[in-house]
Length: 311
Image 1 (tube, rainbow, N blue to C red):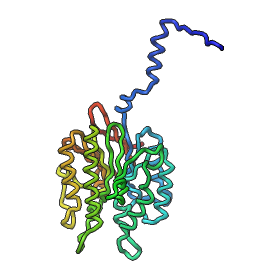
Image 2 (image 1 turned 90 degrees about the vertical axis):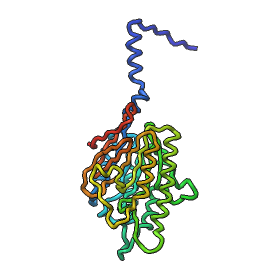
Image 3 (image 1 turned 90 degrees about the horizontal axis):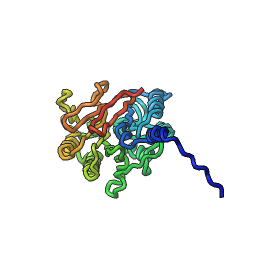
Image 4 (image 1 turned 60 degrees about the horizontal axis):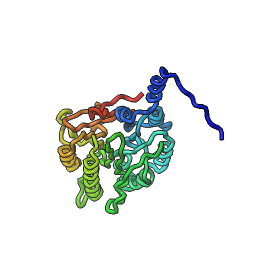
């Protein structure tokens, strides 16, 4: 049997070599301090080439991001066609980043049939089948996600998801920007009422999970603007009288009051073209996202969030 010769390094070289080796080993705590994820805002419009979305995906692929959340599958001017959804799904599957989809109103709630009638429920069921199946994110290394549809009582609500990264619990909630798809019609507003129940249970589960696991923060993605920090941004009553977000807002306030960490809400601004950015009131923050993409960073030492425009 061959024996490898023993190599003895001069004492003067041992310490410098050891320091070099330690510098090459990733520091887990340092990685936590540098934790960041991307958010791609819903574009104002997308042409046939889909350039804005493709560019945003390409740019986020070049970054070292834990994952990327797409806040809307399509612009309001695009058709709600099977073909478009299939093409968009293929595009997301090609991304190197782990992609999470948070639905917008234009993805389903605002869709119309050729005769002008609502196609909301048909389109919602279709996007659920196309984008919200399986235990992982789309593209990338397949980030594990848990879905509300794992519960038999809420089997339909696969778009409500949660996942963990960087000591934070993340979740999506289907709350569209068209006044939460509340319809002032005679009789039972079944879609709104059923989804409101599912969302209430899901939000409670997210809060319980984050508290039980002692997460530093809870980050929620949805479409509509509940104006939680509205007095800081000049709130006004919702058009049409009935505020479709009142139940959701009430539960968010209770959650924020009870949760010991930070709660960050990521959503679209209510008015098109409104200023985007992050606003905090106590431990509650709202991040309004517009077209393009942004990097969201979390500093574990101070439990604070910051943002930077993507480039």
